[in-house]
Length: 469
Image (tube, rainbow, N blue to C red):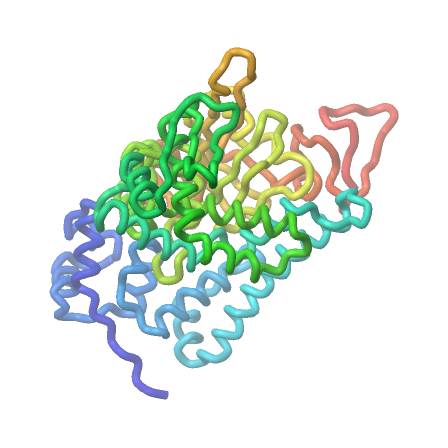
């Protein structure tokens, strides 16, 4: 076996420290080395050792993506993530993982691939379970469910569209600018010969192909008007790319394919307004402060949250987060997770999750430290939103959006700053849904888990009217 190549990364290490506003002494203390040793590393006088590589990747997982890693280092980190899955009782020591990746790389790759296959199989099993349970005659998924699952299995990232949208944004606004409403309108007029009218309508948007006029309802907020124009820019300019992906998708119905086409155009619109590279850089600089990002990119709170959930480009991943939207009845109408947390596929979400409280309290960001039954902790936020109908005789739409990450990434998530991440009393024990939650001591349980039998005592009554065997 060839000698392992030494890794020099002084510039990246110095950039990391400056981005985090750390002194050399502060970073050296976190890494367990002396400031003079850190200075030598930053000047490329000494290479990173395997222990320091493990430390940096563990403490700063997002910043680590900018380091010039060799195959062995990347394999070690992938193996560490797989081997430390809560599925296993005891995590492997870092030095053992490094030795395994170096001396048995073929086995390590197989283990990582097997773990990924296990995760995908679990997700597909849930989909099959859902398809068999939904009462739709033949038990088949509805078209919108097929599309939702297509995006989920694509990790909520569509590379061909995202890169094309990024190029389009540069064409419209220049390399560093954010496409404004005026710039989007000008692009439609000059490139496609389409005029834009913003006036009261009975619908959000319509396009008269004969007159070449795009009409936008003026009753929407500015971010909504801008998104509707961006949708038409994306659908018109990137139409061939969008249609090719939709036609190649493994969907069973024409309706699902049409819905996917619309979903991909919506995705492209978000990618035009918030171009991947610039948005990822801003998100890290602002520590994923949604309000700051929304102001900078002139987008809504929900649009910004949704875009954060798509930062899954290979080699340039963003913070692994979960995102969902919940209506007043508890229905999850949007969902994606790049974390180990997966949303309920049946019924409502856990009643202890903060998103339900947020739905009743609009325009306030609520923060929660939660722990799932597998022992993983999450920092999550939720905000109640109201979409006005623009007129008195129509009720506004009320719902909440939630965004969160695993507690290990709290340093990159501004909303964790006020939380005591080590406190047991500050943690809310949540589940995915009552149907599959194994917790036996939850007083908020709506019904027992599907894999347990219950015992009912005629002469005893607790908060929950049954006990689980």
